[in-house]
Length: 257
Image 1 (spheres, rainbow, N blue to C red):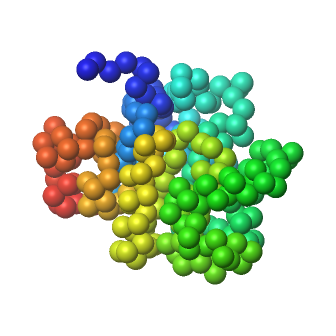
Image 2: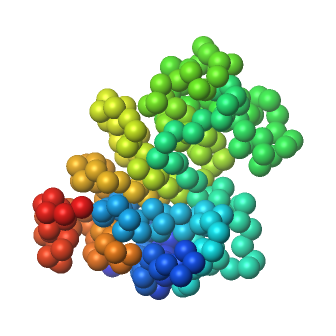
């Protein structure tokens, strides 16, 4: 079946970026599909995390950052002066490498965003959103009896699932994850990977990972970055088993990186 623009959630067109005079991304063109997991791989410093942060304008917070080109969400340029950045970031949620729960209760961590976006929300509705968000990340049964406890008391894996639940509570359309398992043990990593694969049934998911095994396990599509360029992008199975570029094969074989 021939793909149309309706198959794509985010489109990056000729995107280049700079931190001051240092160029980081060079002419990135990528179409990110709806309800699929797109993995971004490449050695440290190749630009994959910078690209991820371009997708919800988090780089705006970095001094001397500059971007050229266009990134569109459902056809709308997110860098347009008319863009409501707060609303856009609600649609495009972000989960970071280190779990970063707020120093407040388990309940309030997930309720925080929903309250911010709707100051008139009723307590019953808020409680339903919190419970549903925890259930989506398979954490409800583990925390339902201690919702008033500090989120800082949770294990690392639980904290990362809580951070994902916090994103889900504001009803996003895209979820960005920047090496979400790098600080977790193997058992917690397996649970997060299982969760990510469940999330693609409802969301477009983009994951930066340094773990090639993880990229193979969870990705539907993979983009390989090197020196700020998108060297290769396509179906995960094809890129892994039959890369078009020799440098991609060298990276996948562990010859560098």
